[in-house]
Amino acid sequence: MLRGQNGLYLVKTAEGVLRCRAGSGIRKDGYKLLAGDRVSVESHGDGTGFIRELHERVNCLVRPPVANVDLLVLVVAVASPAPSPFVLDELTVLAEKQNIRPVLALTKCELGGAEELEAVYRKTPYPVFRISERGKVGADALFDHLRGKTSVFCGASGVGKSTLLNRLFPGLNAETGELSAKLRRGKNTTRTTSLHPLGGGTYLADTPGFTMLDPERCARLLPEELPDLFPEFRPYLGRCRYSHCTHLCEDGCRILQAVSDGEIARERQESYCKLYRICKALPPKKRFQRET
Ligand SMILES: Nc1nc2c(ncn2[C@@H]2O[C@H](COP(=O)(O)OP(=O)(O)O)[C@@H](O)[C@H]2O)c(=O)[nH]1
Ligand SMILES: [Mg+2]
Ligand SMILES: [Zn+2]
Image (cartoon, rainbow, N blue to C red; front, side, top):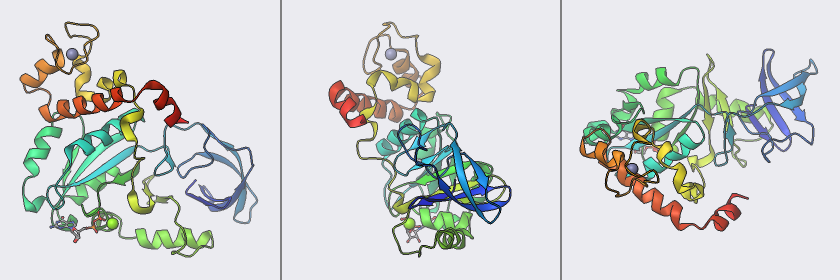
């Protein structure tokens, strides 16, 4: 499903994009149909159809509302605006939690300073792409990485998301207009999240304002589940002196040892500590209420 609005859904099928209605009961995990949902459609043969079934979701994001996402492209400028490493790590953790692979796109690299950020993330499994001069350099490699995947882009205002997307997908604005027209809505009405089919099984979630994720973010996570959401910690987990090691400051902590040895980036471990304290500070009851 590419886009839905007011009970009308655009579904990409072998016979083209169909305008569909759906049964009133169709929802999964408490959510109604989301862009990115896989559905079974009964075609009426005239460009319209009926959604009979909604398939299991691999994952789903609430903000932006989109399902079955493969990659979260974190767009970060090396300068202007200055990067916020903690927010970045918070986003990688949220992506990990949903089984979405984070990808870093460092923009404005011609301004200098990319090495520092790259050095941190080279010690993670996350691919890092250096983009300079408004995408003139580096965008092709990123494009190759996105091929055949469904991606969500996010990043602070001013980092160069629009510039990068225009460079990567020059037809995107036309595509946006086409989907809007199919739902008989002007470009300027309330926007909903669309999934843009860009050929070859590549999809891009176009999210209104790119206001990635909700303000509570990681506060919903249990502190105990955090270590596993830092993939570079995983080889060391279970090898600390104390079985209930929090990896914050304990003697004999294998994670802290790996930081000293330069195997895990200190900055990432610091983000871990900060997140741990945030998650710990929220009483379980509150956490439950926030989830509902
Ligand atoms: N120096 C430099 N400026 C860039 C680059 N990419 C984008 N910009 C500029 O950064 C500003 C914000 O870009 P924009 O794409 O609107 O950012 P968005 O808010 O993330 O969508 C604009 O003035 C762009 O021209 C880059 O690679 N290098
Ligand atoms: Mg923009
Ligand atoms: Zn430990």
